[in-house]
Image (cartoon, rainbow, N blue to C red; front, side, top):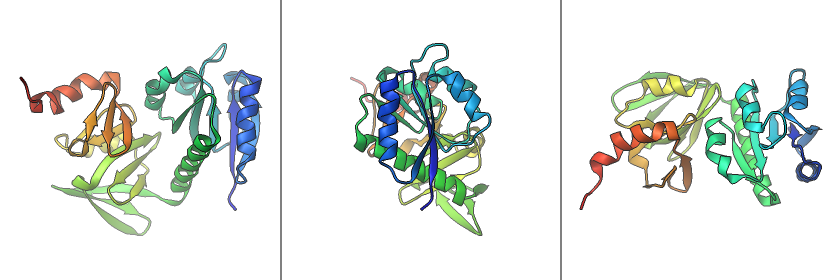
Length: 241
C-alpha cells in the first residue's frame, strides 16, 4: 500500500492531538510531525517533503493564511479551524479543503481521500493542453490525445502549477497554471470566478452571494472577480419587473 505523509500545525495542543488521532486511524497516512506555530513548521518544510499539510488559521505570530501566502509547498493543504468565515480567502489560496472544529472523523476521512486522489493524479497523470479549436480542444495524456468539447467541461480548479479539469464524465490534470489555461479559453463560455476557479457559464445552476452552484459543487465567487462576472454573465440576462 502506498503511504502518504503529513504534518499538523496548530497552536492548541488538544487540537493537534485530535487531528493526530484521526491520522492514526488512516493506515496509509503517516504523521511526520506536529508543530505549535507556522515558523516551526516552515523550518521543517525547508528540509523535508510531505504530501499533506493540516493547518490552523488563528495562531500567534504568523497566522495560517499569511503563512500560505509566503509558503512554497508542492503538497496539498487542508485547513483545520474554528472560524468558518475565512473559507473564501482560504480557497483563493488554493487549499484543497476547509475543516471546521470540532472535526468529525467522517468529514476528515473525506478530505484526506480527496487529498490522496489529487496527489495520485499529480504523480500519475501528465496532461498538457495542445490545441484549441472552435468548439473543442485536445489534452495530451501519457501517449494519447483526449478530445474535450467545451460544453462538457463544467469547471476548472487551479492547484498551484497544475489545473484539474472537471467534465461531465471524468476529470483530467494538466501541468499548466490557471492563468495560462484561462488565456486560451473562449471568454464567452468560460469565466474566471476566483483565484483558483474557472467555470463554464452554461453549466451554472444557481448563484448565491459568494457561491456558484454547478450540480452539487459549490464554487467560491471571489470578491475581486464578482462585479465583472455579474456584469458580463448575469445582468444582461436577468429578467426585470
